[in-house]
Image (cartoon, rainbow, N blue to C red):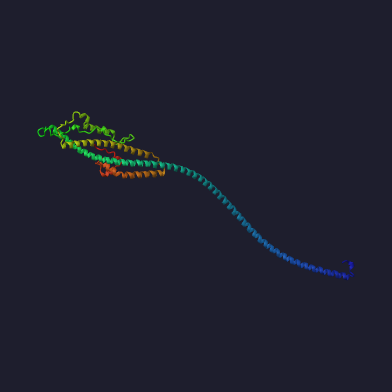
Length: 365
């Protein structure tokens, strides 16, 4: 409002007075409101300060925890790095060991194949040796039978020799003492002279002896057999050299007595027995040579066989046990042969003598 609008000074004064009062009321309201705002602001500031302090404490705590976590993380990283490096080294070592084990496994498989081939070869050789041993056992059984027959023939031969000696002495006595008065010419028994009582030549005897393939020295050498034959040829005269001048003259009217025919048959039996004994001795000597050769061949093959590892030792132990079992089964036969070959050996000592040593004993002619 301008000054021209008032009609008087009082109106203007009243107007300004009213205006003053209105502004004062507004000022008082503003002051009160300002005070209220200040109180609120102060309260908010206090709350914010308290909240700031709490947040700072939380921040410090979280920062410390973060540092701790960082420290732990670094330690764990170092531990994990060391563990990873250790595991890498261990993995490399395991890979290298695996390669070495694979190479060793291949070499062991090759050695196992070699040992398997050697074992099959040894098993085949052992089967062959076992067959040969069984054949030799059968052969020795046959030889034992022949030896027992030879012993019986020797006993019979000794009896025939005694009878022959008695007959020779009787013939000598009859040749020295004349007997013309007691016995007539027609009743005289026709007796052969002692020179014609002999065995046939050894060349006429076919001896079916299997000669051994090798030239190994036997128990009885050929010199021994030839010496026995020479002694026999010296003791017993040859039939061809004495047949012309020592054949008995037989009268057409004379008859042989039963005693003289029995004596002639006995002398014939003696000659046959001598031939059989000679053939048996020759065959026995060659058989001994073959047995010695077979035993030497077996020992040579066993000594030259390679022995590697436990498999070879097991095969050798099985071979030894089988061979010892067979040898123990053949011990009674060997003891019986030793008893016949050498009667002076006692039963206790005879059981300790192996078969190959018993076959080395000589048979006395």
